[in-house]
Amino acid sequence: MNIEQNILEESSPTQRLRAALGLSVITLTLCGFVYSAVTTGIGQILFPEQANGSMIEQNGKIVGSRLVAQPFVQDRYFSSRPSAAKYDPMTMAGSNLARSNPELLAQIQQRVSHIAEREHVAVEQIPSDMVTSSGSGIDPHISVQAATIQVKRVAKARHLSEQEVRELINQYTQKPTLGLLGQARVNVLELNLALDQIQS
Image (cartoon, rainbow, N blue to C red; front, side, top):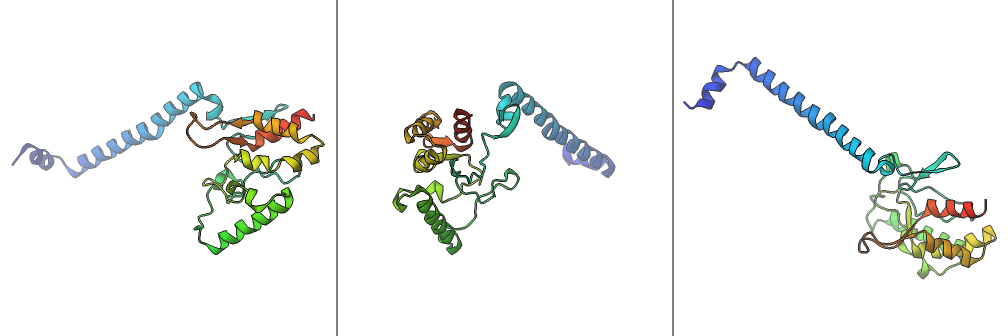
């Protein structure tokens, strides 16, 4: 009989239960509380804006987050991409519909027709991100092409020249991360707030 077997035979069920519960409490404390507190503290020290939701304030009032899309329906604003989560960060999700699903195809066709009519552009000019939702359902960015096809409508509604609006898009275009990851993109909320700012 080896040493491990002797120890197990000499320890009572109560002792083993106490040891198991003690280990569970220690693990829960370290992983559930200590780790969370440390990472939260590091985030608040090194990245306070991101740790608090990347909120955008205007005139002392929070108007949104740089990380969450909002629905914009007025002609004077650039539109965000569609959202399967209705722009709610608490229920964020993709559509979960397969590319061959008739319901998804019908949704896309409806969006294509609406955008083509609203923006007065050919169907071929409409980028895919304007008719499909993102994986999260709350992606705050659109492609530069998606912003460009909206220039004429926004400029007309705001009585601005198209050149002024294009320059603003260029100003708020974010390059691919590290110059390699993703594509050039525009944060819709920031762009719309900038439009409001130049006309305030």
